[in-house]
Image (cartoon, rainbow, N blue to C red; front, side):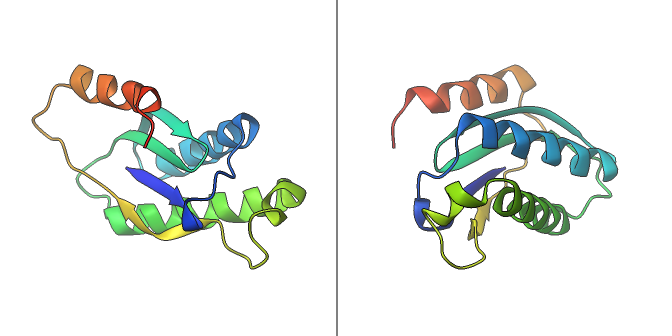
Length: 119
């Protein structure tokens, strides 16, 4: 899954990214899944998730975006206000790909290499 900041603003610091990962891990585990890996740039986050088939992806994404946005805007308000003056953080869109047959090692390598390629 990929979540992108609103207007692709480079708002995410390393500390914020770690906090986003922490919150995401809790939410994914509440849905019965596992946050296997994450990687990021200043304007987006990649998550490798292992989810049971009973999880509705759109609901999980909604929960992740809502909770992480709320926490980031509260805990890092001075930083976020430099980029957004309205109560937003994530773009409305997201990318979620299913990789049921792909080896986990291949997907991990892809996520790890995202920070090597500048967009």
